[in-house]
Image (cartoon, rainbow, N blue to C red; front, side, top):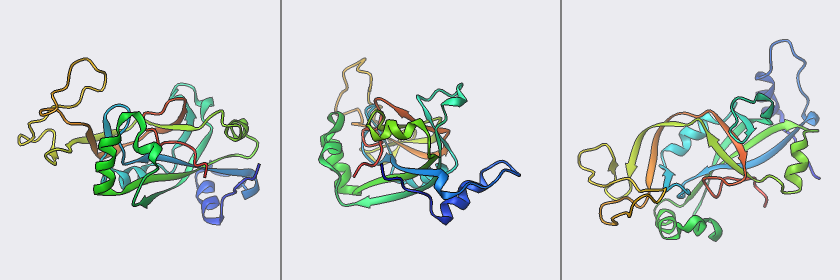
Length: 216
């Protein structure tokens, strides 16, 4: 398995996060794995990140741990740490992401207006971590963000805050408890003004279909 190691800048970032007086790590001790942590498409719970939220998330990601299953009480499940985050922009998105979770109509409209934007991250982990084998054999692939908080909910129909008196629309029912009135209900809502982010986790079914290890 080919291993990508941190460059000098990334290694310096990692070593600055170490406890004081510990011996600095060397590049050959560390494996880097690239993931997509978020994008601007609709997720399985009928929401998306507002386009302005992506840079905010990218700023919060470095220094966060990669863990398993959002299990915050089990620190031994921490598997790595984010040392770099950046936004990749394209005019189009892969068709499998456009059509994911039945959101093809909305996703096509989003890509037409915003393009496809995705946050990529580099996660540093021990070269001998068992997770490296699990990634190699595709036993784990998908990612999810946990412990995030945001101040605003944006309506994509009227381009106003949901809390604005000028927005008459209801939030979509992502759990199917009632029948949405298409004229009065948002097709999805947008999470805006990010104020906190706690961790990222490897999961079996991600809320955001495109959040996963970069394989190509």
